[in-house]
Length: 208
Length: 208
DNA sequence: TATAAATTTGATCAAATAGTTAAACTATAA
DNA sequence: TTATAGTTTAACTATTTGATCAAATTTATA
Image (cartoon, rainbow over all chains, first blue to last red; front, side):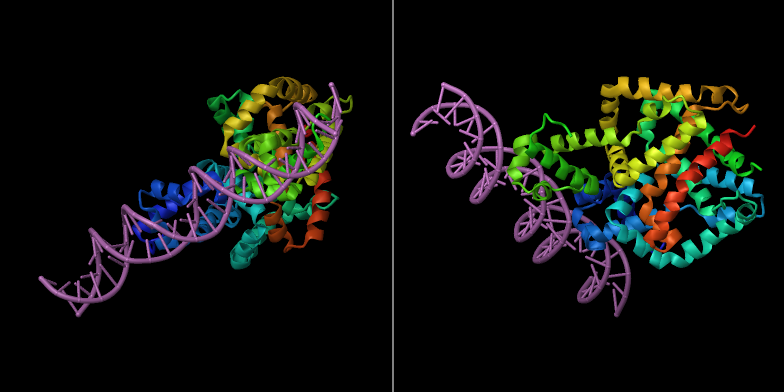
């Protein structure tokens, strides 16, 4: 990860991430994080002073993983369709590797919106000025030849993320309602769903 | 609401809902709920014994509001396109009236999946056997003339809900990133987005 | 090696908090 | 009016938990 961190700091951050992501800020216990890291509780305070500061560290790094690397997906010289396919595939992969991240981040975002706002104030240069324009650029042609009501690329981005994210967020519900709790069936469905989403989007936006 | 409940019980439930939805199970404080209800803390325990039991009551009723009344939207004799429009409009309205409900429910669903599973075990008759088949029925024609890869109505349902839900879940983020925190602009966008979603879906599924 | 600095631990504190209890109060029916 | 059941309150208890601190241990440095 980060070589400026000591081994102990890294152990703590990994453990804290696991516990915070699963239980949230108020549900997490410093003792549980210490146990998970295999160290004494006092060490947490030695390295991070307060629970709040430790949480912040975890939250900041979680945000970095959560926000799609739109820019990198959009900067290739492939067609818009291919870019959409790459986005859906890559972002699905990220989320399936961290299935509890979305709920954690969105929960904290609603618990304390200031937190995310200050994050963007700091990273405004990298998030907004780079990622979003890259996406706009990629959809410029689309926006120009779009429907008469005026096609807004932001809607397309929200559509994509929403379709990718929702079944992962609501995973336990979907699995139960649609598949009677059968995990294997659910996984197959989710794998097939990736191409479905791409086709669904492309089908809609390429309609004359 | 429920006339079998005394006025005090109702006050408690309203207050508990407000606090639990905003802060989650572990973040909520019994004292805060009591204050919000304008009563003594002991009364909470008198009526609901434990925090867990009070939370359950709130969670159960929240689930009822959260899950879209698919069946009622699907049972009219209008076209599939009109059904989609009604679904998008009505469900958007429900969510905008309860903007913190989704994050609350999805958070709890991930915190304790057993909770939602037991809910479905109880309500399986009304949720699954009524709502889902109604939706399947409405999309049967679609499934038959669907794309060669085989159109699964479950995907359509997930697509709709995902697109409607995501901007509400991530509201503070979207507002900040896309609209520099300007609330009015965001609201206008969200209102226009409703018809965009309907058109986006219909455009995709009616493509020959 | 000796000294200092950094790291780690166990014991403990103080605040927060869910839950209990007994007493006071209120409405209702005999 | 009195007895009874239901309701509400204030004070209290027990536990959890974030945080602190001094002592012990390890590591780096002279």
